Image (cartoon, rainbow, N blue to C red; front, side, top):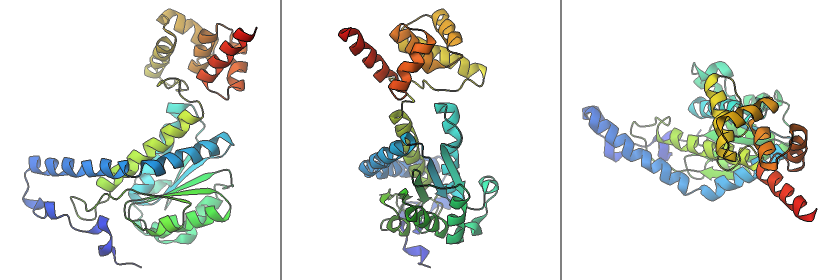
Length: 306
């Protein structure tokens, strides 16, 4: 086991050596200053994040899944990103999956020892019936978590695309992945507390991967969440507003089309843009693989050729 002190995320931050003497304002100023480094660290790895989006989009398009694997804070961040995809993008909970060492109960009660087993990482993926259509994204701020190492190694053995997200350079999980994303955030304000800058950087990257891949499979039109699920009054109002924004129609027209589309905002938008009924709009969306813009473009071409 490597000396933790050699990891940048575990070293002491020279700018906060007197943290215990700081006023509340000095603490938040220091944390805010350090958080900027998280944004800069992510900026430095944007090409790698874009590649992860490309692979994730291909996996989803082929019927595969995005599977996040992590322990502790990193695992919780993966779970958080996964559970927010169904209400935001209208996908099944099985499409973006978060796996945390120690099981889902570890989300609310830390089980730090659970991360020390490579075999557990492998077994948890086996229990998810991993296949080569899936992409596995391993998360570890330290870059050395055995649980994540085991998961990535098993995923590669099945032919899955694998991505690692770490906050230290030349990490162990990077060596186990097809694509290494190393957002080097440096020492934390509170030594070794990687739920801070390192966690922020990982969350930023996960935001990009899930959002980018969902856009890639047609879950957005312009910058609107056209597949948002309407599970409460706020979201029903949001769906109406989305249809109005996309089509430049009145709320009454939006509500009428949403009713005809059984509440499906994407379908209602396609109906309005193409000037067609729900059945024709469904067919147009199938042909366009769920992309509203492509469906509208196809319809325009067809009209020109008619």
